[in-house]
Amino acid sequence: MKGGILTNYPIEEQLLSYNRPGTPLHPEGYVIHATDTPGATAQNEFDYFNSGDRQASAHYFVDWTTIIRTIPENEMAWHAGPTANRKYLSVEMCEPAGYDPVKCLEVWQRTVWLVAAACVRYGWVVREHVFSHADISNMYHETNHTDPIGYLSAYGRTWNDLLTAIAQEVEILAGGKKMKNLILVKSGPDERAAGYLADFLCAPVAYMDAVDPADIQATEKLYVVGGSNKPTPGTVLLSGPDRYATCQAVLDFIHSGHA
Ligand SMILES: [Zn+2]
Image (cartoon, rainbow, N blue to C red; front, side, top):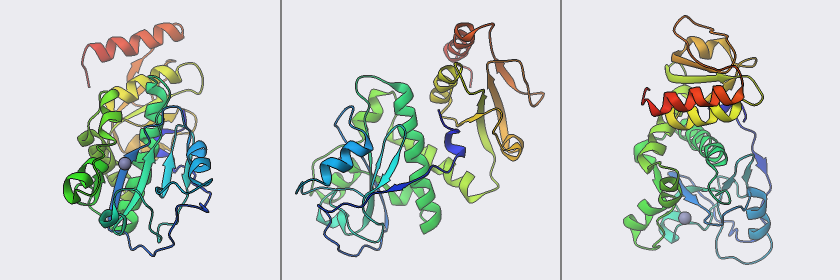
């Protein structure tokens, strides 16, 4: 697990040779999609769209390790029908093979960061300028896709959860606002348990030895998974004598419904 949402994720640029009309775009918002090709990575998606005429494309593909920009933000992509294509940026959330909440969380965090950063750059209000493909289908009736709603719901999340997370990230990126929750973990076996807690709290994870002290200061409630270090007196420590006991402590916390 990377340093969570607090990291500015790197973006790889690999520009498409196909499925890219070259039409100028002045983006007015974002459309979030899901690929519906389980197991395919961002690189796999790029390779597919770069190897022939697919009548489809997107500006960004995000998987559990990587963000690839395949079309510049000032050019149109083919992702949601002619009207929306002329207005909006697009990101495709990759889907892990099978049920994999850890990979799903990685995709979620990268997508949240990517879209929030655009909202800050363009001055967009999340609930007015960020759309699901399902929203676009309802607005313009040029497509009938309902992604990424099904992907989110398979992991117990809603579209509203995603908008909420993006709006929180905008506040963090725009500066100064408090984070509700932050989870700290040492690099190693407790990362998986920290991932479960991050999933439950919709909160970012940072490495204990790499966290910015300013982020600790700005956090309302700090959680530490594993070990015995409590950076603040109010820190919630979820820990046991080994990785299994630590994981159990996290699961007990989640099942008790505390948040
Ligand atoms: Zn879509």
